[in-house]
Amino acid sequence: MSEDQIQPNESTVPLLPCVAPDETLAFWRALGFAVAYEQTKPYLYLAFRWSGFALHYGRAASGVDPSVENTGGCLVMVDAVAPYHAAFTEAMRHTYGKVLSKGLPRITRYRPGATRFTVMDPSGNSIVFIQRDEPETLEYGGSKQLEGLARVLDNARNLQEFKQDDRAALRALNSGLRRHGDSAPAVEQAVALAVLIELSTALEEPQRVPEWGARLSQLVLTTEERRQVESAVADPTLLDGWMPTAT
Image (cartoon, helix red, strand yellow):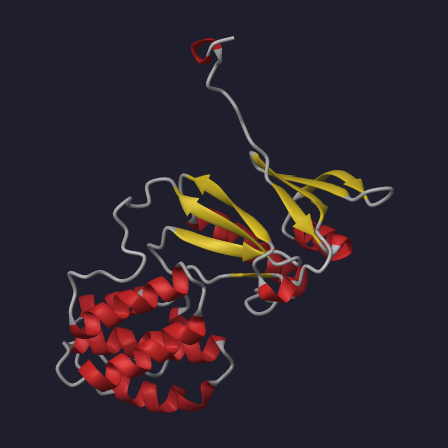
């Protein structure tokens, strides 16, 4: 049979390695996934379905360490990522009383306008939800067209959203603010301070939040610039009490 006789209607289902069957079952059930298949003996096979896609699991190779978080993963291409993130975080709050944002399993933060987020399962697999119209020219390493603090902010965004490294993003922002803060526009300083507040809170290191918050409150911003600052973080309520009055 030649290739032109094959109908282009294939579908693939990721088969992910699983080192924690009970935890995996509990987690995806908590997020509202239906268990389509469940078997642990004589071999492990789990299948889950939610909306129009499926996740399947088999036994992982011996020696896999979930804490390294490089077990495996898959991409889920969707029209818009925000509704998926909202559905999963709502399910987490309902089951766990909070959004799981640290350790395994967890979900990464979603900033308004972002085009992807990641769910880390109990086995250290990354299930990455990506918006189909994500720009092909997206700068994963920081745009070379930007300079000063603007470039630092872009690099920190990539460290958060694509490398999922809050620690590296915090270090980059803290260092960049020291180097470029005095010469940068007020709105860029405000975005940097706002993201630092969010990152330090997420990393459970709030010691410097009052310092950064005090600096933020001294800046002069327009109403539109305030909106820009608030949209730079996933949870604008973290900025309550620190945001300056709009001019």
